[in-house]
Length: 293
Ligand SMILES: Nc1ncnc2c1ncn2[C@@H]1O[C@H](COP(=O)(O)OP(=O)(O)O)[C@@H](O)[C@H]1O
Ligand SMILES: [Mg+2]
Image (cartoon, rainbow, N blue to C red; front, side, top):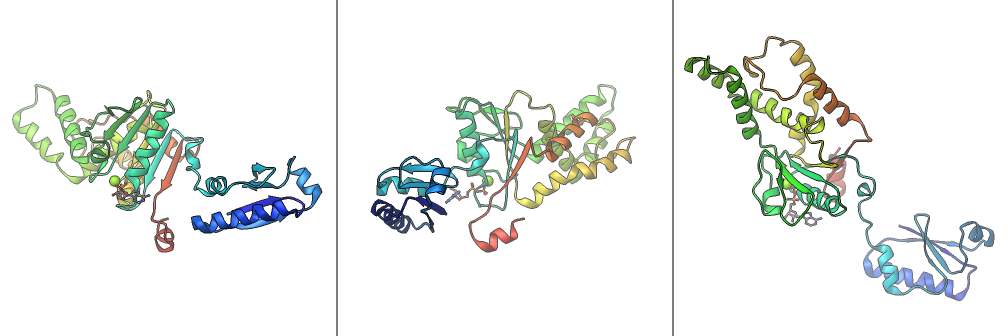
C-alpha cells in the first residue's frame, strides 16, 4: 500500500511517518511511504494544512499528527468495490470450500440492507446455502426471515428435471395412453434432460424470469459445472437448429419455458459487462490464484 505524506520536512511530518510505520508493523501491512516535500506539489494536491496524508489519491488526514488508532483504520482492508456500483447479475464462482457461499450471501445481504430487492440463487448441487441461512431451499424463491428484500432459490438439477418432465407430460394431455406417457418419462430420465432443465431455469432468471428483483446473486457450483452451464448457450444454438422436431431428451412437446427471445436475452445479459460481473473466489495464495483463471 502506498501512503503519501505531504509536508515540508517538519518535525510533525517525521512524527507522522513514525506513527504510520509503527501502525503498519503492528497490523502486518506492507506500506511504502512516499514523502512529498515540494510546496507546489503540496498546493496542487489541494492540501491546506500539513502534515497531510493521502492514500489512493484520497486525502485522509490534514494538520497535526494522526493517532495510532486513526492510522490503523486507514490500513484496514477496504470493502469490496464491486458493491459500490453493482451490476444486476453477480456470479460468485470458484472451487469448493473457498468461500463462495459466504461471500455471495454477504453480498446479497449487503444489497438487501441497502433497500434493494435481491434474489440469491444457488446452482450448486452440493449447496450449503440452506445451512448458511438456516432455511430450507426450493426451486422457487423463498423470502429469508429477518432479511427484508432478500429471497433465495436453489436450482437443484434433479428437481428442475422433474418439474420439466411434469410440464411435458401435462402438455401431452388426457389423450395420451399410459404406455405413451411411460415412454416419454423414460426418454426424459437421462443426464441430457437434467442439464437442459437446469439451464432452462437458470437462463429464464437472466431474461425475464426475475424482473421484480434489482439484483440476482449467483452462488455457483464448483468451476467445471458452472462453465458448462455458461457455455451451454453456444451449444444450444446448434442443438435447437438441428432438432426442430424435438430431440428425444426434450420430449415430444418441449416443456422449455425458454423461448428464443428469452434465450437471446439471457445470452446478451451474460456477455454484457454492464449487467453481469463474475467474481472469482480463491484462496489468497499464489498457486491457487495462478490456477484460478
Ligand atoms: N474469508 C474467510 N476466512 C476464513 N474462513 C472462511 C472465509 N470464508 C469462508 N470461510 C469458511 O470456509 C468454509 C467454506 O466456506 P463456503 O462459503 O461454504 O465455501 P464454498 O461455498 O466456496 O464451498 C466455511 O466453513 C466458511 O465459514
Ligand atoms: Mg458453497
